[in-house]
Image (cartoon, rainbow, N blue to C red; front, side, top):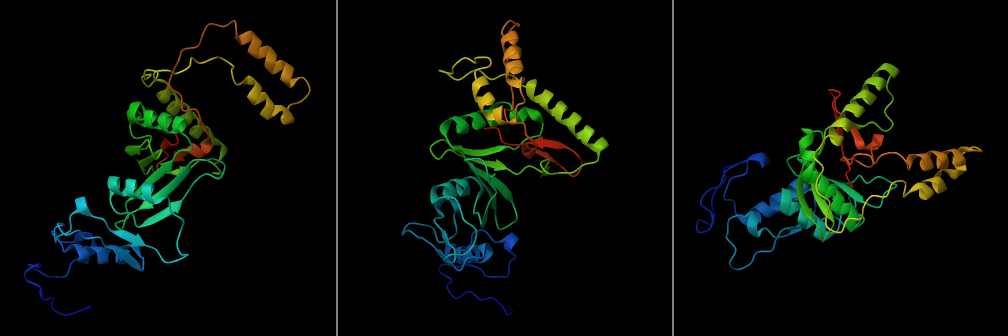
Length: 276
């Protein structure tokens, strides 16, 4: 494009010039901003809803723009209500990528805006998982000193959260030399100790007391095809013996400390995700 910009509607526009996408002027005519949002998002069409009393200049508080993707094209996206919830928290999202783990019922989306900012939007499979993760992210994860994501927004009705991105690659599937692997697992132990040392939040009203070994039968049922003769009897003997031990101290735990939930940064720093 070339030429000299010229104002044709002085009653509604007081200036015109060339601007970069990452330095758009304020205020800016709302319908012009809508067109640029479509261009930046890479969609063929947007619908710009403008009410009679809306300002001429773009105002995020009354932004009712709807991006319209090409029919049958692009990645699948979360439901409209979830998209609107996320955009209210972090602004316009131009790309959604489903990064859910194949064996879980919760859904996780990578959300990116036009400037390259990245967040993660998670939809929990039930109210219990949602409440547990939100409580962890509010109560004790901030005390890990950046070793976990930050909670940006939560909606109990949608069972959805918006989280900051966490640097690193999952340890799951990462092949490391034996000496480096030992250092990594020592670091995992140190991170786990920090989690256990976090202040224990008060139990929610109505929370059932923890019953030791309550899940014994469930775990044995799952493991039975892999047990050798005598293994089950040995496990039951150990559990029966443990009943006579003093009660263990209650501490904060992650509950799903698998390699896929541990991320290793380029500098070797470990971080942890997935607190449901």
